[in-house]
Image (tube, rainbow, N blue to C red; front, side, top):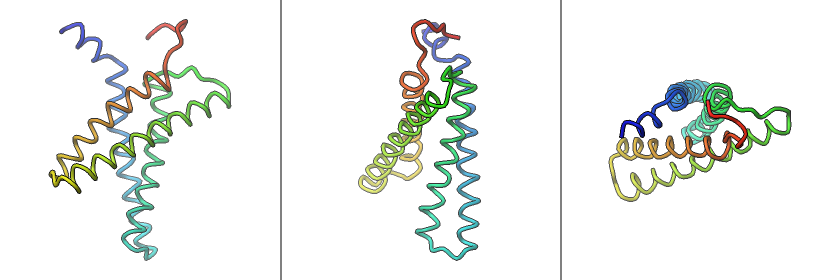
Length: 149
């Protein structure tokens, strides 16, 4: 059990969690700023909700990509083509987990009537785990000749 904990709790997972918290802060800050500006522009609630959500998602995922690339997974992709491919995979992975989260929220909260925050927290834990797995094993995976750090 101690060996498993040591494997799970390492520099990579700790930095992933730290930057995850910071990514959430970026998401909330940009959503709030966009909401404020859209309301000042006289947009209706649906436009405010939809546009601020998209803006905050783009900002948060961009922040997450940069921090995950540099500090969490120490990406070795170099050159324009390799970085664009890596970024596209990252955004694609995050888009897939956004869809999963949306479906979980609809099913749990809207269909089954489970408390909003219980559903949201559960969905976010699932998304956090899936995002880590997608990033570690598909996007930023180390090639066989690269040593683990």
